[in-house]
Image (cartoon, rainbow, N blue to C red; front, side):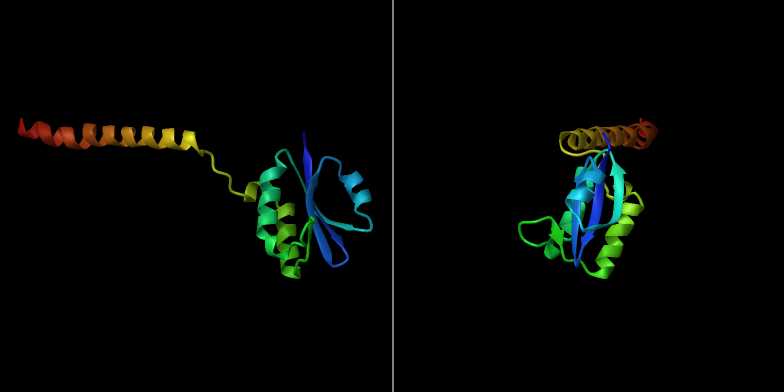
Length: 125
């Protein structure tokens, strides 16, 4: 189900969050002004990245941030340029990364032995 990642301005504070119903969130955060939003199927990584990026500007115990103009522009560009594609998520991680590494190691070793070491050794026999 599609979710929205949004940036809403309320005075000099900004709210960064996600919701399934953007209109309802706009009503709940009135008189806030919607600055930017992104529709995505997986909002968690993007929200986590944005909140981590602006953690130093966060008001304690809330989802509000005191952002500079450059930070607002940066956050807006991430959301408007499909931030889910800008946020790097590894294809392999954990056990699958380990298995892929071991498999690749054996495959490269096999090719080195088959196409480099064996032809050299065959000349001496």
